[in-house]
Length: 67
Image (cartoon, rainbow, N blue to C red; front, top):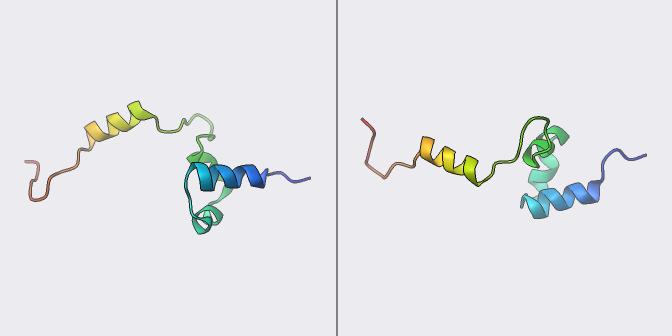
């Protein structure tokens, strides 16, 4: 019995996450699950989470530093 549905995982990793084959095969199953939002208690990053990160860590313009 095969524990992993490799065709589905490959589609999720290479099509859904747009990983290269090398990047996909270098991941551990735990890392892949985390990236797919399947880790217990963790959800994938959504738009609200991204906006919060952008607000907390804004990009600085070249030559401009925070005081």
